[in-house]
Image (cartoon, rainbow, N blue to C red; front, top):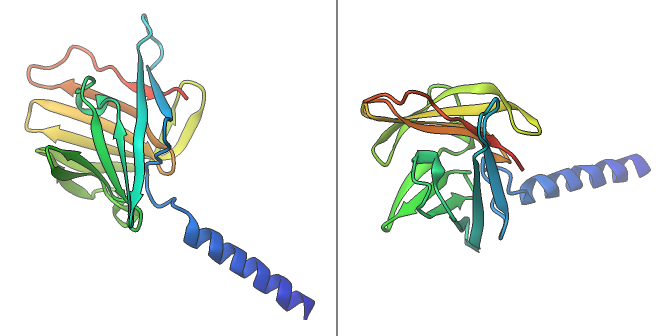
Length: 186
């Protein structure tokens, strides 16, 4: 009898924790959190990018927030409004009242999956990448390439449950002489 009670207790604990986690998104949003990136080593000069998360609110199955900047597509000086569907894990950006899928949900985080994001052709090119951050390493990261015709590219590496751990945005036509990659510093 005691065995069954312990088994049931463990079963319900696992069920409760798994049903109440909001871990299906690649992105976590915490009010007043500051996410910091640094240009990848080796470097001649240090460049820091800090993004503050604010206005986090939950409405039904959606979490909304504002990011103080959007360096992921070369728009460092513009705020970015995001919305996460907590059921699917999909992450959307909201600009001028229009929503665009930035990151797909958990079921679509697979190599070869593609979609359109604000004119960019997005494709998941890998799901097993290793990323060396400034002070820690990340395993099994998802790499997404965004291409805007032949002119602009962005590359983003995601660690599910953490967020963006590496990125670069650069011009391809005419080509940038070098690409600066930024990595997670927190």
